[in-house]
Image (tube, rainbow, N blue to C red; front, side):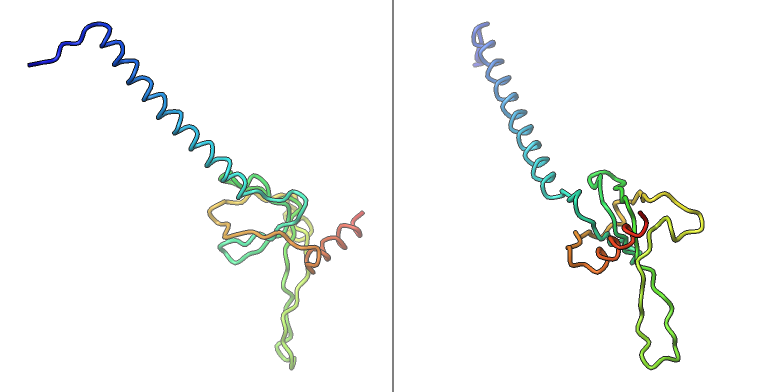
Amino acid sequence: MPIKLNQKSFQLFNTFVLAILLAVALVALLIHLYQFIIRGRTTVVSDQAYQAVFLSNSQVYFGHLSAIKSRYPILDDVYYVQLLPTNPDSDNPVSTGRVVRLTDSATHKPTNRMVLNREQILFWEDLSERSPVLQKIMELKQTAQ
């Protein structure tokens, strides 16, 4: 025997279903916002520090990393270590390098900004104040002024 719903019962049923759908949507929205906030905190890059950015092609660049959440993060004030050739006849063939500003090194004179492919970034690290690379960067900045 089928159950007959009167108009009032039907409206009550519709209100109940609508309340459940709104509650589910609200919970989903709160979960999404919570994950967005948590992810935002875990990918914060210090705008005060220099970062070492390690790429999948074994290159390491130093600079100020920003827009890390985008597909193409940006590295400003870019430096890298240029390895100097060693003398193979030497008794101690130790590789040495020098810190070079991106704009000072290339023949095509790029701006001092790199747009990176996020998929090529393995990881990044903040440089400490004791970093020899950071100390050399600061020396180069002082001599450029």
